[in-house]
Amino acid sequence: MLINLLMGLSIMLICLGLQIILLLAVIRHYQRRQQRKPARSFSANLSAAGSIMLLLVLGNLIQIGIWGMLFQYLDEFQTFADAFYHSAVNFSTLGYGDLVMSARHRLLGPLESVNGILMIGLSTSALMTALQNTMRQTLKSRSAPTDD
Image (cartoon, rainbow, N blue to C red; front, side, top):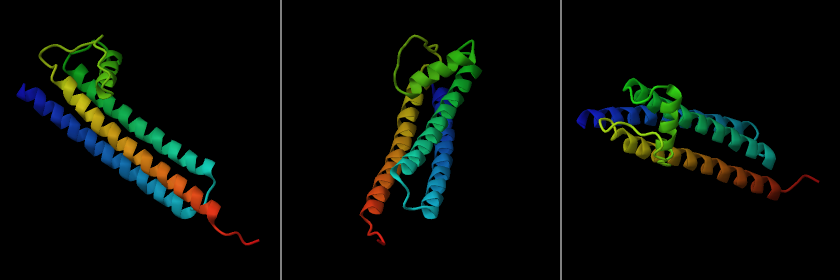
């Protein structure tokens, strides 16, 4: 059990590091974009928020893949597709139960679920911040006096 706990916590730290790197890159990109063209249209701002969402979801999919590789390395699944699917079910806390791990490694499932909750929460908060900025910028540009 201790080895599973250490493996799971190690993967959680790797995922957290990946999420932080991705969040910092997304924030940096978003700030640069806002500095270049701060008063853009709502659709342009929404497009920026959409690209942030896609990058964060991609980061979550990479993390699901990392957990899936661990499950396949531990010989829990015959194919990576099954390991990835099981990992996605754990990460998203769905818990279907159609594919299950052996009793030997079953502690990794709940650890991945905790990891998924935290990482999806970080992604959600970053996306909400971007959407709030989008709405604020749009309202600010609409209420600004014009030079007519």
